[in-house]
Length: 171
Image 1 (cartoon, rainbow, N blue to C red):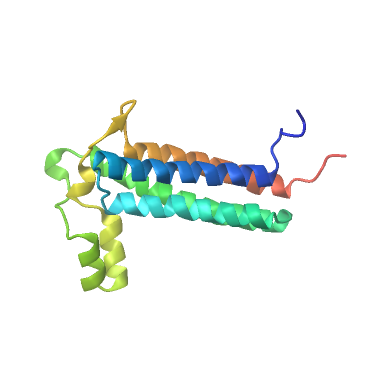
Image 2: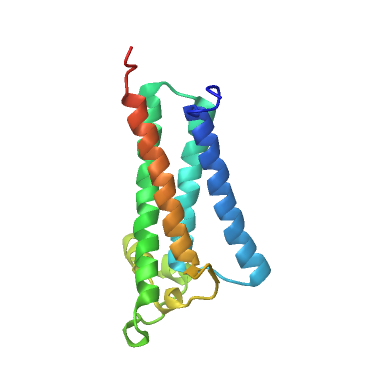
């Protein structure tokens, strides 16, 4: 039992990679099989989840010492926090009354082709009327609400990784 609990940092990073892969696979399934096309905020959330997963994969391959583990946990935490902020904004937009929902904006490709990068990113993160549509729910929660919950879980795992890397044995 002690071999598997508490899990090693390598095992936790593999778990994070699998969780992020599962989240992206689910998003792609919903997009391809059910025809749920992602809005700009959905795409941003996917990028955040992928960033957490990629850093976890690098950390799992590298299998660093305590300092490296803390750096990787910090980078993953920043990506998860960004995901929390974007998903939280998305949930907020979805909860607005219909008369307060922002107007639908230009498409993602149009934004990046016709606006300076910083303006396009501001438009992307602002969200629009497309982001307010709830096409699918599971247990009464929309996709962004589930992403919010998952990003909070990813953040918790990484905070735990960060803190335990700095702990010294009591003996």
